[in-house]
Length: 89
Image (cartoon, rainbow, N blue to C red; front, side):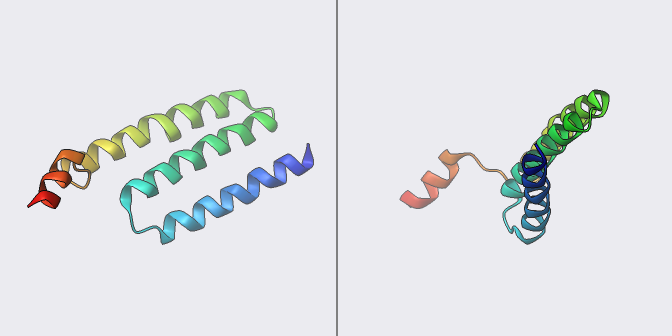
C-alpha cells in the first residue's frame, strides 16, 4: 500500500510540473482535473472521506467546468467544424 501511495504522490508532482509547462490551455485543465482526482484518492487513503468528496466535487468537478466555460467564452476552444472550414480554404 505504501508503494501505491508513493506512486500517487509522484503522479501529483508530475501533474503539477506538467501544468506549468503546458502551452495548451485545454491540456492544462485536463491535467488539473487528473491532479484533483488523484488528490481525492490520496484523501481516501488518509481516511478522510469528507475531504475526498469535497476535492472530487470542487476540484475536479465545479472548477474544471468553470475553466471549460471560460475557455469557451474567450474562444480558446473552437469547434472542430471551424478548424475544418479553415483547412479547406
